[in-house]
Length: 73
Image 1 (cartoon, one colour):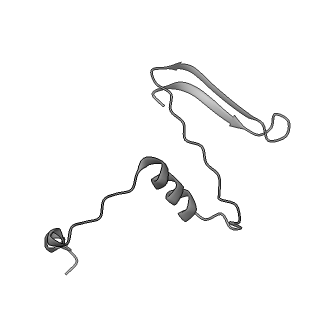
Image 2 (tube, one colour):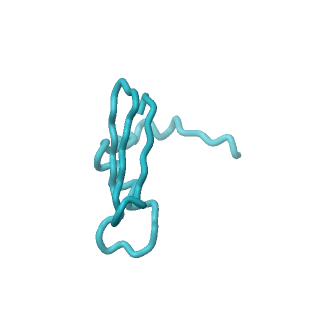
């Protein structure tokens, strides 16, 4: 967010949220939660949802794999 503001989650009633922006040029938020059925706080489902929202990386072509090198020889 290219601007000044704050986010307050909770503390205002039952699970309330406050979003405020004092000055901004553009405002863009992506809010997500863990999928239903996930018991532990794992990061992998959040990353999967983010990739679904923003787009997945294209697969590396087979003929380009010869250029991948490691400095840890």
